[in-house]
Image (cartoon, rainbow, N blue to C red; front, side):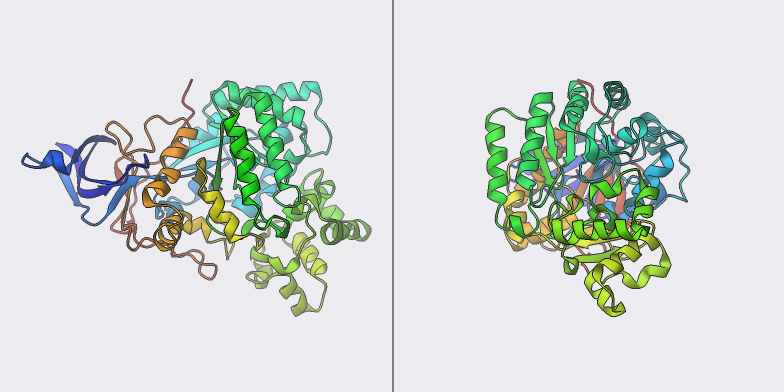
Length: 536
């Protein structure tokens, strides 16, 4: 007998086609048979060791989070309900140009400190890997959901060039090309960049093009957090389109937003740019999260010149009065490149998490609110936090526009990505709610997308970008990474006030044919593994 039959499900199969009613048979981690209602009439229905009545539930492929920051959380937290409870069965990590492989003994600590705000410093993690392949092997030890990895360009640059603001030499570019090739050969699906984060921001287009040529030659894609989401957003998008055209590398635009006041109502300009490139033959996709605020670290707002050299040099500049005044002027008057060329508005910057518990009273307040409580300027508060928390503070940045969010999610190349940072006392609710928020708010309540369209955005379309031939669709022979949800009740439980509340209306989630969520509760199953690049 087969392992499981899911009876009378409304199958939304990921293709975008209308749903149908069927029994779905699971065996040995794969979909063994799909028996549609018409075909089952008058004949014996499939049997299995276990049967699940799915009356009133939608069965779809598991959701693919195209932009996740669970690089350490997958190892630290076997439960990982933040993603499993949403119906996520695969996350793409190694985002924004900074992650934990490839490294050596010299650079590992700098990387850990640079992204403490994203993942914690990792005192509870045994960093027993150095290469991409070794990190993927570590994930294969058993994780809650599957994970694919992007080579982080900033980490590669730190390994070869360091944290300094200077061009790479031809020899250094050659070494970075070798590391990119090695990472792809070991199973990475592409390469990411964080072009407003150090040290990735110091790479010029020629350097990035050379690395993208390597990635494209292996069938991977380039996923940049590009140079501006604010004053220079359209120019930054166009730069990435042209760069990947020259390199012959597919492009996936990370958290493709049009934020800040200068971009209100300008989503159409971005979509026209992408449509023109697609019509000319470009291979482009994008991901978004269905919320208006962004989330990053407080240190990310600093100007690039102040961030050169790594965390310790940044802290030294902040401690120096004259240099700190230069930083303040760039932030508040000129418009720091770290803040996307827009002068910072401290009333939009909400502290969402701190590494030092002694600073916890700042969490949930904007920098302006915290400053007023202490009778000091916003910059004095921000500077004190940056130094006291050793750059580990995270923020919510309330600078988005709902009309842009809705327009971009309708695009034919759109996929879903949470950009979920799980650290901090008050994380962005997207970390716990992105996928049910799409289904509940934007499908059922607003009708921005149909259910079939939305499921395709969250399943088959990202699987195609990742070149995974047996995931993302409900098809016989495909992996049984599946989610069952109630379309009438599915919703994000997480809010800005209670960001870690779990979703409702998602009773069952399967990874590799095994229940990781059953009757709305997390099981002890660790069926996830590293999903490596499919060779061309």
